[in-house]
Image (cartoon, rainbow, N blue to C red; front, side):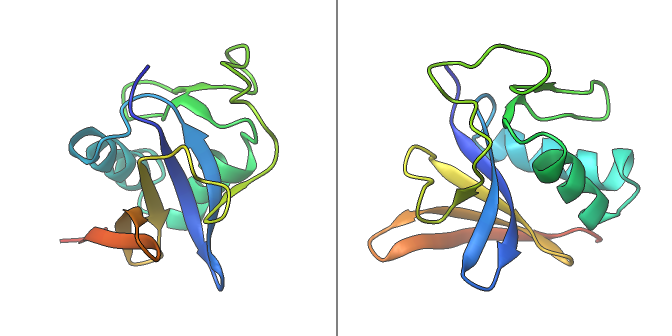
Length: 128
């Protein structure tokens, strides 16, 4: 199994999102998520969040990229070890994730578990 991660949108309390099971390490996930937002959704971060979080409540095996539509746990694959849940993943329930990718309107933030909750380790703007 790949690196478990969460793709999320920011909330006043932290974040809410969906799990993805493969390619969750930053060197892959950041590129795939940027490609999805910038190329597939033409820079519309909220449209990307709707697809990744709202329209696929089971989460993802592979996040869509410009070359494929991805594989979601709610439409394309049976649940893997109970991974498909329609409950959103939040900062309190993301204990199995190694990384969280938060789709802010102006940037993509990478979070990791820290001593006092989730800590941002990297951030990249959507536009250069």
